[in-house]
Every structure is written in structure tokens, then in C-alpha cells.
Image 1 (cartoon, rainbow, N blue to C red):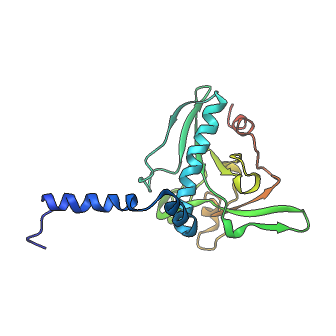
Image 2 (cartoon, rainbow, N blue to C red; image 1 turned 60 degrees about the horizontal axis):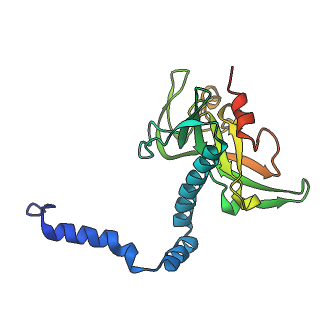
Length: 211
């Protein structure tokens, strides 16, 4: 590759053709590909949920200073959206329902599912006790509120909210007992209708963060 260079007109032509691949299919074909490819569907659905969540908050009219942090910063960024409520910054992590986990609970007569609540990449996490662990787990304090779209259950862009501090701690034996109290479990159980600490009212959830 010693004689290879990225600086040539033909290189630019080839790169533009790669970008133009999507233009060779119809919108309906693109939609079919997305729907039929689980990994792609999940990524697209996640981005749609982020857009709908921000629109939902903007329509409420009581939030300001919206900011979407760099999602390429895997080590430092643990939030999907930052905004202010009455001058207080609020950090939200948005996670989706795991489709294959949706089940009907015959005893409670509710739908139930799991929500994956961890980072996509393993990184060094610095705990308040001074320990450092390599993990995909979030830790307490990485964000303020976990938000989950309820679209699979309601057919509308409603959301469920849970405080970061109320998320379950990991019980994994990979971590010492002392470290587990700082690390969040990688899955959170959600039922619909909502139960436990989950709320459908973000203002109700934010009130718990206010002094």
C-alpha cells in the first residue's frame, strides 16, 4: 500500500458512489430493508425515539437549552439528551424495549418486558470507593433519568421514566460486593400498565430531583 494515496479524483468518485447506494432503491424498498433487518431496525428505531422524545419535551413548553451530546464519545458520554427545567440541568438516557422479551403475565394480567440499560462498549469505570472496573454497566450518577418509549404498548409516543438512583443494582459475581452497590443492573424490568417506581409523567419524576 506504499504507493496508494487517498488524494485522487477517482477516489472521490468512488466514495460518492458509496454514499449514493441508497439512491438506487425506492423509499418503500428502504423501509422494507429496515423492517426486515433486526440490527438495522433497532438502530433506526432508537434514532426515531430520540427525535420523538425531544419533540415531546419541546411541545410541553417548560424545558429549555436542549443539547444532544456526542454519541461517539463512548467513554465519557452516558446520556442521550440534556436540557434544563427551571434552571436545573437534567440528563436523560433513552433506552428501548427489547422486542423479544415482551411477554404476557397471566397473574398480573400485564405486559412485561426487559429494557437493556447499559453501554454498548466496555470501558474503565471509576467508582466512588476508588476502585476501577472494566464493564459495560452504567454506574449510579451517570445520568439522572432513564426514559423508555411506550410505543409498543400504546401505539403512541408516550414514555416511561425511572430515576437513575432507583435503578436496580447489579448482582453479578463478576464484581465485588463493595463495587456492586455503585453499578446498575444491565436490564430493567418494565410492565404495562406501569408499576413500581416507573412513571409516565416526566415532571413528576423531575420533582424527585429538585431540592
